Length: 344
Image (cartoon, rainbow, N blue to C red; front, side, top):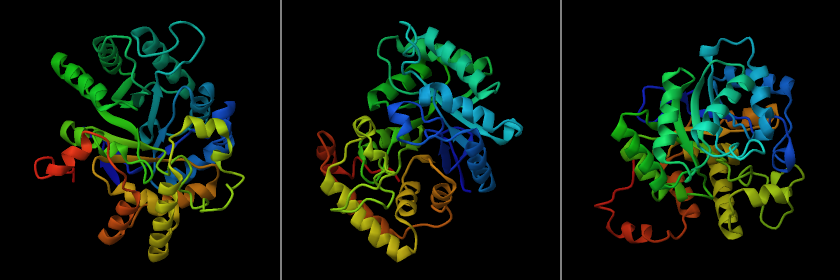
């Protein structure tokens, strides 16, 4: 397994990490992902560890806390320092007025709850699951800094922030000498390249590593979707709740990318998802790509994205197939790239 620095920190993480969205299978959204129990989770973790993948990502809202609890049970007995555990909080987790957001009240409770469910004394990477505009940024960052100083969190990150959300937070942390965010868990795939427009240049400039979620385009780049053919029965896209909750992709873009992936897969002797994942692993600022799996075979297939590289010509083919018209001001900035170079 290849290891990379998490942003501009001294912390090394595997290029592939494992997402636990399939653990538990509670609720309309997560039941469409999978329903992995403790025994199955333990087996998947065994496979990951054997391959050198030791980073496991979860969140409090995944199956209403069940994913964290199952992960905690599945890692029991393993040396804690052999594991990298990342989790997230911000979204509603309870019915009370203060059981949501990034207030001091909610963040302290969220971290303590996650520690209990995970059965651990500390979280390696704690990420805000989304931006909360209600509390002052100073309240959020001072609370997180205190949790780091208390030893409950080792590194901080965010997820689903816009460029100004992230930059304002980083500037505030610098102003007061508080712990900085070093990771941004962001959606990025061959059918969703918006990350490149502003978040990637920001990440390169500010030393924030991308931890990529849904790298297969919300289940669209598994190699099972084909133009003019029905969805496979096991696809999460069979669930309208899952479709509505995830990124939207124009049909023509999807199948243009799938056609290019088929060509490259044939050239390399790899599978479509392996090619899609390998493309991401070559992108600037990417620290780790989160892969999920319903079963052992799917996990082993995803692990096959490591240990080889697409050629420059194959990358260019995929780039061209997945290119879309940028919104303003990014199309305008592209007109003078010599002053706004693309991250490398």
